[in-house]
Amino acid sequence: MTLDQYRAVADKLLDPFIDAADRLGVSPNGVSVVAFGFAVGAGGAFGVASRYTYILGAVCVFWNGWLDLVDGALARERGVSSEGGDLLDHVLDRYADIAMIIGLAAGSNDYALGFAAVTGVLMTSYLGTQIQAVGLGREYGGLVGRADRLALIGVTGVLAAMTTLPTVPTRYLGLSVIGWLLLFFAIVGHLTAIQRFWGAWSDL
Figure 1: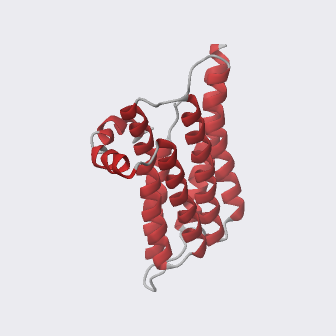
Figure 2 (figure 1 turned 90 degrees about the vertical axis):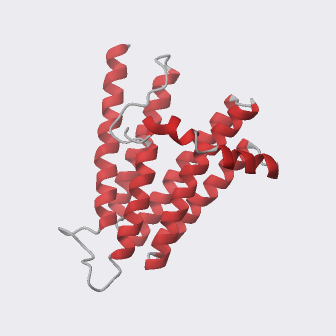
Figure 3 (figure 1 turned 60 degrees about the vertical axis):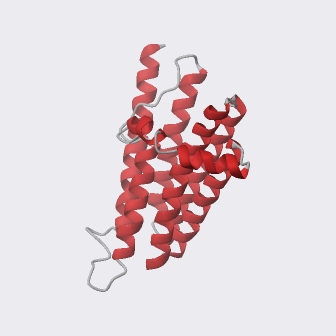
């Protein structure tokens, strides 16, 4: 969890976006839905897999991650934080993860790696909430948090756009840059899930 620890720093930059949401009358849940829309847009753009759509997908990933910070900050600012809002946010985040990873896998034809990656990401998130459900508190431990995943997806989208240039190799050791990202998510996701399970099991 590299970038998640800087959430407090990012929160200080959110005031203009919170003010804009207030002026537009957008609710925190509304911001969550808009953020999810950007994730779906990213998945679609990655699925098309052209130079410009990879860049577009990377931009959409950025806005998904940024608005994912805005919704929580807006709820706290208005004093309307609720379990319902938290539930909606988590559900939309999981569907957002699925949309982006499926888009990456479809655009690169790395379906097996996409399956391994999405199950790793979902199991990591599932273990975090399931550990909370058995009374041990929400578990955020692991090598890669959601903020890190979004940053890696965005950077990889830009790199994938570069590989469409004729002078840049499209594959490295048999995998595209997206294939390597999916492989990384698969390995780290499942290792993190196992780590969380073992730590919780030891605490029970």
